[in-house]
Amino acid sequence: MNSAEEKVYEILNRLGIGFVRYEHPPVYTVAEARLHWAGLPGARCKNLFLRDEKGQRHFLVIAEHEKPVDLKKLALKLGEKRLSFASPERLRRYLGVDPGSVSPFGLINDLNKEVEVIIDADLEIAETVHFHPNINTVTIGLSLADFKKFLAWTGNSFRFVKL
Image 1 (tube, rainbow, N blue to C red):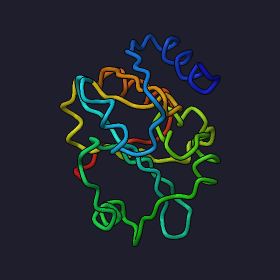
Image 2 (image 1 turned 135 degrees about the horizontal axis):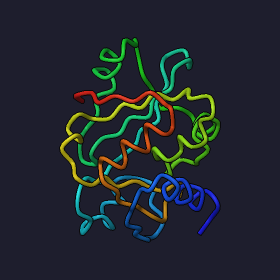
Image 3 (image 1 turned 30 degrees about the horizontal axis):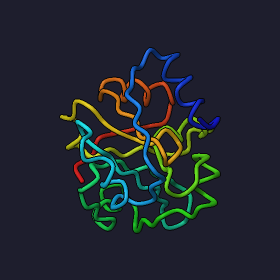
């Protein structure tokens, strides 16, 4: 277990959040992860780290792994002209993770609370959600209620939006 992963578990344990841990080979895309997620109950989530046109606002967008995300429509909903994927450097600076390991647990590293979290409204009915614990060789599942508890603890703004 690496220190980034251990830090996630330490915080979840401190918050009284239970989770189930699944190990798998490294995955960098949803297509690769799909091979290892077949038996997982609940919503398997993808995470997109985006920035606005000027690089002043950053968004972590969370959706069910098979759901397409239209960046043009999302930009309009967020009051932006255009959204694009943030660079690996921005990803490391704001969430402290590398490409392939994007996760809401990276918010642990966003000390200035600069990343806005946008969650697909369809996930509001999920009982369980799955994410990488800041490393792409493990996926953990936790209840949606506990995930919301974690998000509240981070202090980052978050909202559910119909994607």
